[in-house]
Image 1 (spheres, helix red, strand yellow):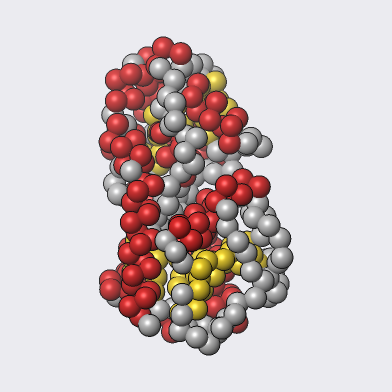
Image 2 (cartoon, helix red, strand yellow):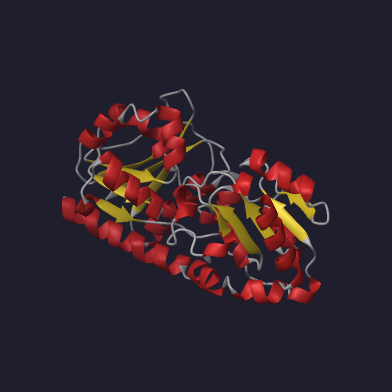
Length: 315
């Protein structure tokens, strides 16, 4: 079997990292696997190395999909590259749903007919994606397979004790800032630090120092930053958008999720104050979430082995 995994060139985010994780895991399972980098708006692949943060996955890349007519050639698309599906002819086309909301926004679901006709197996990164693919795309359960991901091992390798943590709240300014800003203005007693223009090492240091990570943006898949923050010892406060609405993708106690943020600022600020005052008690309520996160690497490896078995049985 030869696997080609599409990914956008030089993009550093959760989806591309997951694609490199897949390529690495397939190779470790004895499969022939290549990254296939694409440039937005162009049909031709790009001949470049893996982005620097992903060099550790030791993936190879190709600029030509060989033996495209053979059934043992497998191309794995993601929901951001569905426009390439008709342009590639191969024995097996797989679609990996990592970010449902981003797909909807980018395509208005205009190519669902092509997806239904040409994709033989759907991989889902989250429960949120599973429900979308099954209920809205209309794919039967036997053609959907869970293959999630895992966070960088630097997160959670060491967790700073509670007594050394500060009243710091971390947030991603690229997600849900309109809902975040009033809270930031009303709670100046907290030190609010945006996670932007930082490398992994810098983010790890901040997450080791902070008490809480707040995320009121969209949750188009099983997002990495909340898991990275929780693994690093932070409490996590979210809304109930996307994957955060269910207890599979974001399995944290209900009191840390808010359905209507703009009408609940006083309640949210009171919770943040209590987290800062009684941090150890609140932190313990995230032990199950941290356990799930800690098991993700092994779960991913098992999911990929199952995926390989399913694909081989298609031949």
